[in-house]
Length: 333
Image (cartoon, rainbow, N blue to C red):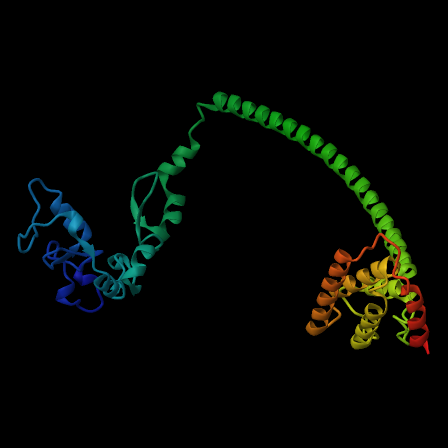
């Protein structure tokens, strides 16, 4: 059922009228044959026995073949309409979409008194009930069920007392668990403090060991002038493998490694192991350029070939020791 035309402030367009109830369409739907009706009106029409046709053109229609007409619904919802209870005194004007909500709270809506069943406006009901004779008579009648009410009240009190007792027990258990949790929390906090102190001590020890194990850097770059300097340079690079200190010059360090390789890589077991370790450490670090790393790679291959074909288990070359001494002396001079 749609909305009565006389309820609207201005006369609605004839195209908005339902073909069944002849009022403004509510929740408009469209049939396959192009006719629009109220959704409830069409459902009622199609629910009749042997009815499966359009009310206007009698074309075959099923309720599963209709669809909402959102454009018409939007137009209707924005039309201005008067309150349904205007004849009772309500002069409010609103849009159709707000009408249903207003009906539930309109002060002029008819309501029935629970005592005398008289119909009055909603805003008049409190005053009417205050003067209603039947309501007053009902309030003054003796309570025949008073004993039963007393028994019910006593049982209710007992139930509440039992519930209170259970709640108190649960509260005590919760307090005990909370105390246990607090005790455990304090123990964990003490353990955490002890662990932090141990960590600080270990960090201090590690820092001390690191400072004492790191070789001192010689800014004169004397590495490669003596056999002992090979291991010192190797340890220096290893201690700062992935981060070269800013005060060290990359190219001068590379020249030192090259000097160690050129001077001591062919001296058998005396210094070949130290040179191999130095070149491998330099190659593993990120101190050097790509071209310098290519040199390290070639030197490592050369050392590997030298190991393969040289008789390292035998005595060194007769002139190796003397050659090293002469080379060291000349480099220092």
